[in-house]
Length: 347
Image (cartoon, rainbow, N blue to C red):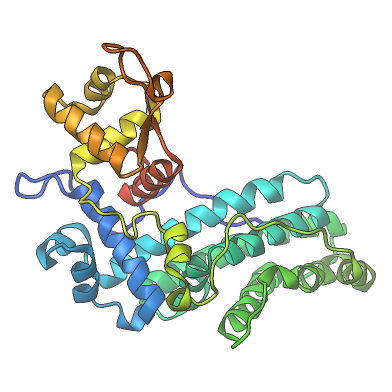
């Protein structure tokens, strides 16, 4: 199953734009990322209904003024989270759907990718499928737009595959709604189990009106190849272990305040792996080499970057060779996703 095709990475928020400067202070990328990370944790623990601006700002350690400098209101903040999660789902589902030749295999691959992703990311699954229904009119409108777009893809491709069975125009949209209704019910179950177990029944349900009862029965009885998950996690975000929550959000437990300059340094190392102190400073726009050395040393102690020059035994005077660690890469990617529409570390 495909999902909505994005318009060259649309803005993650309904705000007109994230300001690069507010009152002369650069707050956009880093502060926005911190608030979105905080909002995701609040929604996971309390649900959208209890996602107050106060809870978000307290957890992110920012002021209410800063929140309203970036977001219109709490629904705008949640909409940014929704778009973020939708973008991540799209990046998994669309290539899976498009990588198969027959429509039946496309449906199976797309649905399989969706279910595996939701199993891997239970917090995002709840945000997209459950909390999205409790949000305000802008989120509901965006959700309806997504379902209609996916339904249109099903109608187009399914009708071509069926040879034109004369189905109603809303068949695809109805099927998409039914699929998400089943997933919604499973997520709310006391013991939900793995969503990927729904693959055969859902594929059977989708192909039935287009290809007939015989094809649907074959999909229902089809052996299911094991679909590996990339990471673990509790279905209930509030009940997840600290390690599981950290795996979903690398900003959790990070013992430092990520400033605009820090973000630029991490981004420079990510974009130019193997850069020396001087090269990192040039790419990050840091003039003071002494400050650059101190910041690099701190990031190394925090496990976000590592010096690969001579495997830690380079001769005196030789330049350092900096690369991101796995956690540093996760932090940088998370901040870039949250930062804004263009995916850049800084403008």
